[in-house]
Length: 231
Image (cartoon, rainbow, N blue to C red):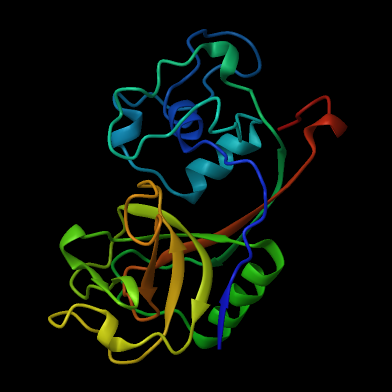
């Protein structure tokens, strides 16, 4: 079976705003929201995870629009140094986070079949889920089947993308001849490196990729219905 989402006309949300305010603490030291965020010297080079994203969004710090806070996957020079007045800009309010799969980073286990079914159902329902994995640029392969990724040496994660679809029959031959999974099947992912990379910014990652981890989805609602955030 395979499924690829129909693209909807929804506004693009800003990873730049999220990363900056997740990793830069409030500059003042009093008030109920003092200390929101952590202090990281280079927020865009630090990486992140679903917990960082969830706690930041739960503070109503984002999600903001990419049109206002553009994200550049090739250079950090044009991002950051945002005004504190922008910290709590948000287009929606986070209401729930569902974690479908999370494992010990040192484990080589693969996603169980029943969990894969839950992930597919979440994509059908919500459109996307987030995942983390270990990205090694040398292991991406371009062919008539698109851009494909698989490696079998590292189980930790260093990158996050969106899973937007799947193909249970995606061929083993699409991956590098030196690094191929045993069986067919792959997730279709949207990357954050721009439309010039991969297949208009998308690529396939094998079901058997051992570093796949932290697969989550987020639910949100219109922020106009809420005036106060109690936490």
